[in-house]
Image (tube, rainbow, N blue to C red; front, side, top):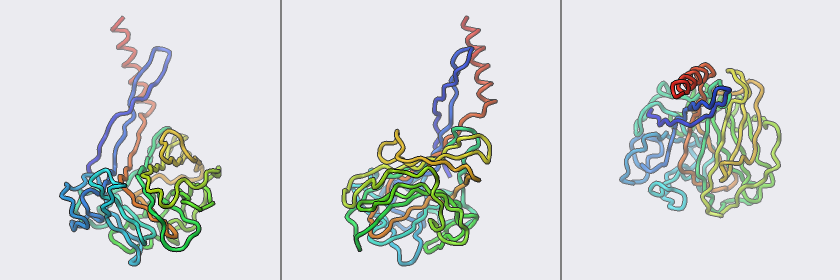
Length: 308
């Protein structure tokens, strides 16, 4: 899989002056659905004439009765107007991180994954655009859920899959009249489906519904996982952002055997909510190890001495 990398400035202050190091941001997934191919099998659901997305992933539905298509929705998409359509049906839908190029159907053995680093500040960010049209079906509580899951070596390779042994993190976003609160969850149950048997992470949130059915506004949602304490078993902080990516709507901490490896992006709608999803981006941020920072500091000191 091709990956896009760029450097982020990190300022390290010391007695000898200011040393500039760089954290590395890598784009793992950037799926705009502009090629019109939902599951990357080479058969276009929407003829777009656009080139294949170079960092896209295949998406599968959870059951034969679910609905998952590519919609020509100019209100949501910024790349040819295409988006992942979960209406009018659809429940759990999963994008699998494949290590090969687009438009290639691959076997389970070709699955790739992403792992949270062990340094404080290392992070994984999942961002997407979501637009809600008017709900269908019965009235009542509705929500939108998305997150990162580890398939435990049994990833999706086609439609209709139970995901019984998958574990992961997800965020619950109430929609419209839903009086529930935004919540961040950890799913460690390996004998049931995704989102089932999950535990809410603390602290609890006071934030309620973030959007209304039929507002037709393109919203930006982000789930960030960040290493808070160093080490493979170090605490992991989770934050959910809605539109304002500078201020989290809700944050929580997992200090009990945090999950760190993921190979699936999972989304779910409930009770008639009608989301269209676009511009799904998965990124990792890696902070230099302390030893590397020390070397950079020595180099900066030597440079200052030369200038003097």
